[in-house]
Image (cartoon, rainbow over all chains, first blue to last red; front, side, top):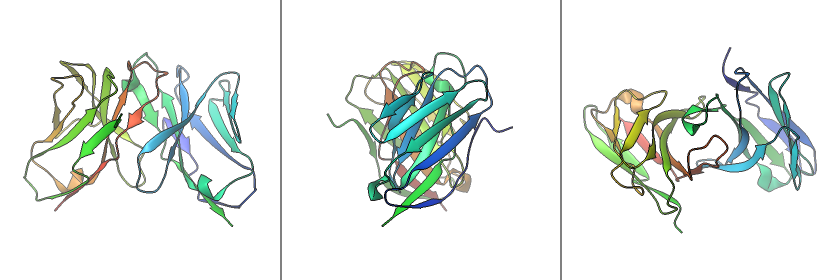
Length: 112
Length: 114
């Protein structure tokens, strides 16, 4: 089983739509979880960390389900500017970022 | 602050050539790392450093060397370039390397090995 799995998409949605991505991870000892955003031919940038209690940042909501070992990202009221690839990132255990595992990313395309 | 900078932005090498990818950060971060990103693959860790004078191997270290003589700089050396090293290389830094830290990425170097 791959360590971090994401649906590669693409997810093609109209402006204003709500879209959700899931990501599953294999290491039950994983401690930290993130969503990064990567625009075409650019570097990844942190979108949000994912906390056990779930967290929200404007139109973005992240959830963690430790029992089922998945995290999710919900984007409400999609904007054209949300078009990007969303990377799920999981620490594979231990305290060092040397253990960060990146998913391959889910591509989102928001259409007018 | 410039953040994380990388040079060059693009590079074409012939098989067997060597070169150094430069990475610098001005945020006084202790932790720095190098990743490669290939089509259809997640970012894979090549080498990382938890502070000046300390480096360690990541998931795919073969064919690459690193050193960390200062907090600011973390160059990546390709010893003898191979076509399999054609990729986009990202340098990243974070304050302490803790598992919850945000990683700040440089703009990347696009390398082609012929």
